[in-house]
Image (cartoon, rainbow, N blue to C red; front, side):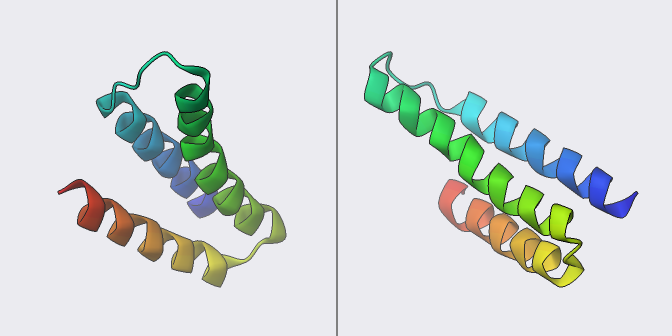
Length: 72
């Protein structure tokens, strides 16, 4: 239950973060926007699949710190 709710939280955070930034319609920028979502999602999914609670917690701390420092 903990891991599922944490995954939903990160997906929502990433979705909200990418919707705040309106990118141009060029292919390279679209690919960058997709990478912005896929890379963190793959990282946190891997920690969940492996059952790595410590890795999930480290990812959580790093992700949230990154969001605070780069978006505000």
